Image (cartoon, rainbow, N blue to C red; front, side):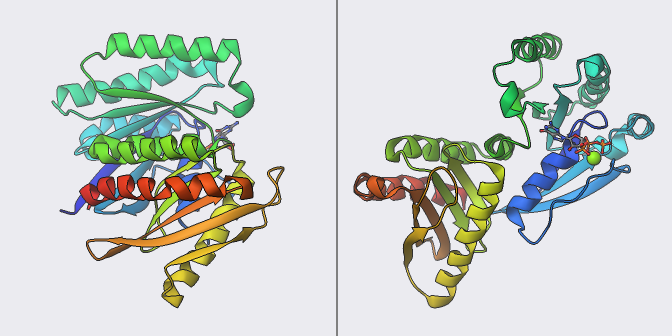
Amino acid sequence: MESLLKIIVSGLDNAGKTSILTALDKKYDFEKDIVQLKPTIRVEYHKMNFLRNNCIYWDMGGQEAYREIYVNFQDVYFDSTDLLIYVIDIQDPERFDDSLGYLNSILTFFSESKMEVPIIITFHKFDPELKANEEILANIEELREKILDEYSEFNILFQQSSIYDIISIVQLVSYGLSVFDKKFFELSELLEYYIDLFKNQALIIFDHNGIIISEYYNDIKPDVYIELIESIKEHLFLLKRMEEEKYEGNFDFTSSEGMLFSYLLKFSIKSETFFVSALLKADQKTNFFEKFPNFLDDMKKILSQLM
Ligand SMILES: Nc1nc2c(ncn2[C@@H]2O[C@H](COP(=O)(O)OP(=O)(O)OP(=O)(O)O)[C@@H](O)[C@H]2O)c(=O)[nH]1
Ligand SMILES: [Mg+2]
């Protein structure tokens, strides 16, 4: 069954909402260039289709004047929300209270309207170099406890994210989708499990249009990530056109990792085509091809439940 999902992305101005969505758009549509972002005027809509889910992301410009409008016309903006992603800029402690106040006005509306909306709160701008910063970590913990205390009746997932940490953005989506269908979460966990077993660099599952359904990486930098996905997509479309089953080749990876081997396989479930891509170093091949059939079986089981 197809469904149309309304996902509200909210938070103060400058929190990073549009950046998060742009990073996602860029992942799925490589024609788009990174643009210089301006503050969002009222609401921008981003549409993303995912298997049987059509997601509309409502990017709610966070400047004060707009926040007032949303709060005054809450039923217009927040009605029928399927998921709320609330973004808090963890690098801006001076505005934590403002942000909690805004969150409160949204959650109060949900409460009063008897809407059971799942919520993801992301502590954003948690950049890689801040991962060991004690002050930031303490702030995250304090905010988390405050929110949990106050809104125990809500189903809230917490996350840290940064546009400089691609995997955190990816997880935000799989967390989001897992709210609707736990299978997405399972898929992401499966990839994490196997990447650990293979000790390889990347595992990515694409649908027949080349849209990423799930992915997992071992340490990968954003610029390298873009290059990587572009290259895989080229091969993927080649594979599709040539009616070949698989592609194997060296992928000239200009990073400290050196030369990588790229493996791309086409498979189908219930007459629908999918692709799986793996990146690995030459000395990992034996281990990889030994365990790959198990991975494929496990993956197909989960995917078939998502269709
Ligand atoms: N350091 C850091 N900066 C970020 C991150 N994400 C976004 N930014 C920066 O934060 C600023 C604001 O980002 P936007 O995405 O425009 O913020 P917004 O929440 O959409 O703001 P409004 O549209 O006004 O509500 C930009 O200068 C971004 O480059 C991040 O993960 N880390
Ligand atoms: Mg914006």
